[in-house]
Length: 288
Image (cartoon, rainbow, N blue to C red):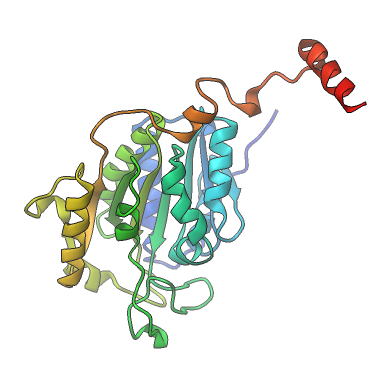
């Protein structure tokens, strides 16, 4: 009998924001009744990248900065799977930036969760791409992932959550997963996930987070309006959270539908000799 790898206890520091993400992913998957054998979580490098080890699902530990490429590969190989990629801000916005940018354009129906703690926690607290000015001697302004995501004209789902509010996070992850499972495309959710050891921002972020749905002019179907709202919030010293972009229509625009269609996908293709003998013989003859 085939047995799956049993999850191990999380290795995170007590109070780490990643615990909230783990709990929200479990709850969202359970509420949507996603069978465990149909759920794949591709983890990145860093503290957050070990999240797949703590769930009894199909998991893959990706190369540094390459989790999106591998997650898209999993989805194209077997479109029936629900695929989640999860990593940190250093993994996704530094070495992984090239894949991050193209993921919006490719628009494969996967969920990408970035746990942003504004530091490289696993390697002992260095400044990351999202670190604030002055943190550990950082002299560069922080990278704003939401503004970047909103600047790419593609029918993606875009949102930001806060580990201090796991209930709202769970609701947003459920919406994102439904978006994926309907074949509508790429869903990006950044979670503000404090590192209590090297950059404990819980108190600061609780004071600064702003629910964009409560701001005048909120319309997640209007990309330009949402960019302006988020930019104004940032310039005002606030941190916008909530759903930033929700495509107007329910079009099924996922990359997997354009490349694979309604087929089962390469991983489930019948490759038996008996069923494909004529095709194999033709292929071999062409090599002679």
